[in-house]
Length: 260
Image (cartoon, rainbow, N blue to C red; front, top):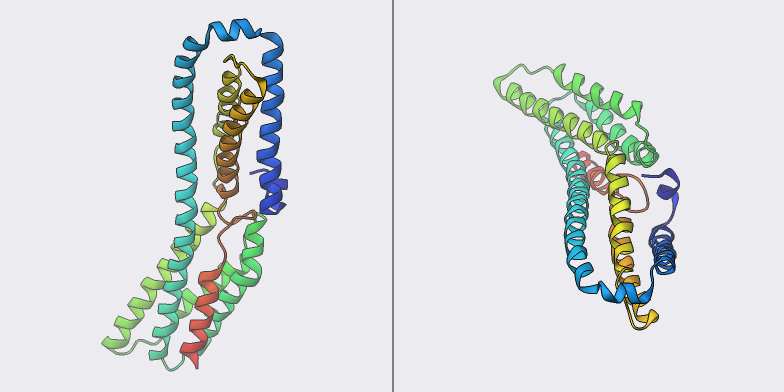
C-alpha cells in the first residue's frame, strides 16, 4: 500500500482513489472518442459486445479473487489477535495455582499494556515492537521456571506452556500478516485491467453522449470502489480501515477481574 494512502481518513482516501479513477477514465474516454468516429463505433457494436463480455469476465474473476483474498487475510488477522489474547488469559488465570506467580502476572499485564499503547501504533506505521517481544519471551521463561512439585502443578504448567506457545505463534502470525501485502505485479495487472475494461466500453456507439458518460461512469464507480476497498484492507493493521486492539482491551479488563 502507498504510504500516503495509509495516512488519509477513510472518506478522503475513498474520494482520492475512486474520484481519481473516475476522472482518469473519463479523460481516457475522451481520447478514445477523439480517435474513433461515431459511425465506426456504431458499426461494430455487436462484435465489440462479445469481446467486452470476455474481458469483463476475466477482469471480474481477477478482481474478485484479489478482493476475497484480501478480505480473508483481514479476517484472519482479527481472529489471530483474539486467539492470542485468549491464550494469554489462560496463562494469567492458571498462574493463580502457583504461590510465587505474581511476577509472571505483572509481566503479562505489562505485555498487554505495551501491545495496546505502543505496539499497535507502531504496527500502523509498519514497524515492530522489540519491547513486546521481550516481555512475551520473558513470560514464557517464567512459566518454565515455576516450581511444579506435584503432578497437579505439572499438568497446569504444561497447559500454561501450551497456551504461551499459542500466544507466541499467534503473535508471529499477526506481525507477519502486517508485512505481507498484494504483490506489486498483481497490483499493476489489477490497475491496468481496470483501465482496459473501462476504456473498451468507449468503443461502443451511443446516440447521446450523456448516456454514455452516465453508464460508463457507473461502471468506473463500481470498479473504483472495489479497488479502493482492496487497497484499504491490503494491510490489516494499517490505514484508516484496520484491525483495532479490541481483543487486548477486553483481555486487560479480564485480567483486572481475575486479579481482583
